[in-house]
Amino acid sequence: MKVSEGQAKLQFTLQKIAIAWSFCMVVTSFNRIAIIEMGLPAAIISLLIGVYTLFGPIQPIIGRMCERWPIFGYRRTPYMLLGTLLGSFAFPLMPGVLVDMQAGSTLAYFYCLLLFCAFGICIAMQANVFLDLLNDVTTKESRSRVVTLTWTVQALAMAGWAWVFGALMPVYSLEAMQDLYNLTPIVMISITILGLIKLETRLTPEQLQEIKTNPPKPVKLLEPMKESMAVLAYNRQALLFFVFIIFSLLSVFLQDMLQELWAADLFGLAAGESTIYQRFYNGIQTVGMAACGIFVGVTAKKRLQAKKAAGLSVEDEKTLPLDFGKKLMLIGASLSIIGFGLLAWAAWLQNLTLFNVFYCYSAFALGLLVFPSISFMADMTVEGQESRYLGLWSLGQVIGLFLSFTVSGCLYSLLVESQVLTANIAFALIFVLQALMVVFSYLVVRNVTIEGLNEAAEQEPDAPITADLQPTTK
Image 1 (tube, helix red, strand yellow):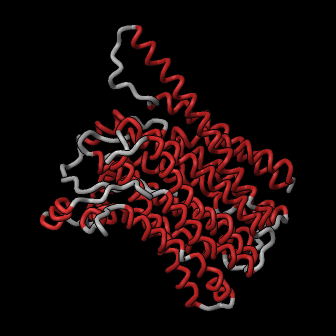
Image 2 (cartoon, rainbow, N blue to C red):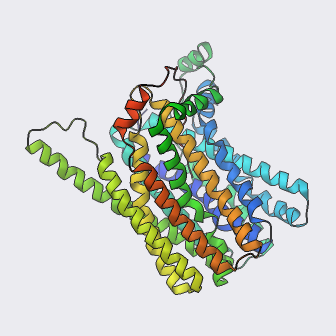
Image 3 (spheres, helix red, strand yellow):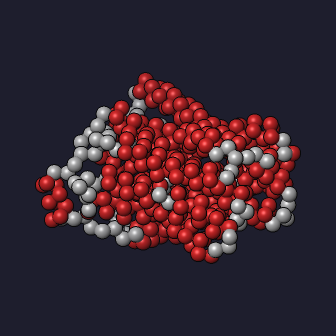
């Protein structure tokens, strides 16, 4: 049953607000406490955190489970709640595990890995159910507007939750950390329930009997992944776009793990004060994305009006044509490169005022860069083979996000923890490296075209398309 657009916007937004709590907890609290306050190796902590991103490809399996085994007559809602329960209850266990890790317990590292595996399954379940439920209860006309709003609010919610964390734990103590982490199940579950009430329609007895009689076929995880990866051997345009996705995500999200660390190492900010960078990052980057989106919408409307006035067909006209998107990307990339250069200078000087000003500028510039980058993925497909190419782009996102955690942790361990360089020089070099990644990702994608992708696809061997890989989430 379809629901009103207003109800859909409200309830799907609430679901994203709940998810945002857990993301924010990982990148503004857990990493800071583990590395700065407890002195655990950044390379290992970042690897443990990054594990959660590797569960993105299991989303099709979760989706098929929802179809095959409804719970109390519902296909989506119970699985969203189960995922939320699994992930949220991992957090109250984390303080004790970190204490044991600090004491040198090898087994505690394994327990920490299991906790982030639980978190990864939680995110995969939430992401899949969110998309399937969205498809069930919204119309084709309203769906894109609901998605745009929910993802925008998720970024803003992370900025808001960062402020809440800073207020609840202005200065680190194990007791304050435990109290904060104990709130996670209460906050996430309560908000998620509000986001699900009366959203899904219960299946009728006839529908349940039909599922028992003719259950959907199970999904084989590796088969669609192999099918998507095989594209890289035949389609150079696909390979270039795959590399672009990885490095663009790496360049943008490399700093997620590092924000709390430079706040402590460069400027001596306490745990509550250091959350300001997550607020800057998510809040101002969202403004940049919104500004770019508004500009694209206005120019698209004018372009359509001009074509209609000239008597031309607008049936296949895209809101953001690839060539125009690349021009916007060049602007965003250029501004981002300048921003990273300015941040490197401010980090080297250890000037807090300059750093904060440049970080706001950099966040806005990254918003301008991210908007066209995300838009490209929906268009870069081959007719009749959409699942194969969208699956490949999803794998690129998984790899890029995983590397953004692990590479940042390794850089911090190699440059700062090893004391090879002073913190100001080390972070300056990391910002320069981010700028180089932006340059590389743009150079890789600048000559990629949809036409080239389709021409190269004609040389690929025919293969059955088995199942979609859902896009992953941060």
